[in-house]
Figure 1 (cartoon, rainbow, N blue to C red):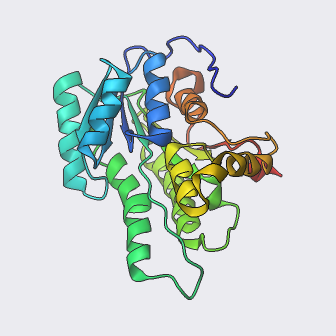
Figure 2: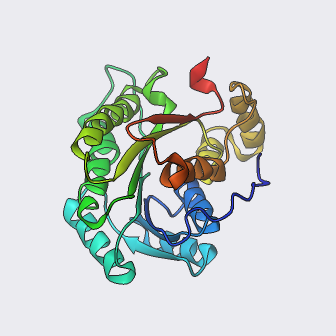
Length: 260
């Protein structure tokens, strides 16, 4: 699939979507795919300049709102702004994430707070204030990671936070009974993003990035890393009527990495 994306039509036409962490990487890829499928998209993040640049690239169907997922009041204000402009919210994608790592014995309290404040509390405060603005047919997609099911040295905080999301969604599925709102988890494998390449460049040098990305991808049954728009198409499926019978589920878009 790679860079040549398939045209899936416009199953999200008329839908209003909010994507946290939408200014770059996976969130930006999700926004691109949603717009291609007909949605009006609001991306949120902490960096106003990054959001402005992203909106300029996404075009007239996108707006950006500076909001902090760790702060429920901030997200409540963001949803109020979305509703004032569009009237309601149809789709919420909880994508904002931070990464940090250390092995047991070297984990700091600051690292714990950083990971769990954004990756767990931030998901709660992305979803909870959205629910009053969503109606029958609304969808919530929580972005997780294969780190939740595949162990990695130094990854206990990140993997543990992502694993917590799966349990939260199981309860939310019951608690949303009767609302017509569906909630699912999209678990992603490694994605070829600018932030990944930047981190690799800082660690091993710019001239080694392409070879390292290729090597990382070879560890997947698919034989390559995923592209952000590919995660976008999987999330768009969970957000569309094509998945109307699917709630409380976990869909792996990981190139088969966690399946073997």
